[in-house]
Length: 69
Image (cartoon, rainbow, N blue to C red; front, side, top):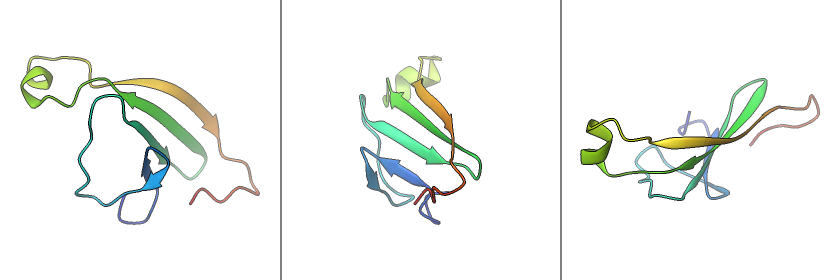
């Protein structure tokens, strides 16, 4: 998804190798919807212990006229 430009971190287009940090806002543009999440933890050790990785901030349909990125 990042390779085709459908992912943004903090409102900026990102590369597949981009690193996430806690409190980053991640936007993912699917063909019919846009999902926005806030990263709550990027600590790999905590994630292995089943810590919450993200919280959904918003999920909205993509408008027909809108071309998400």
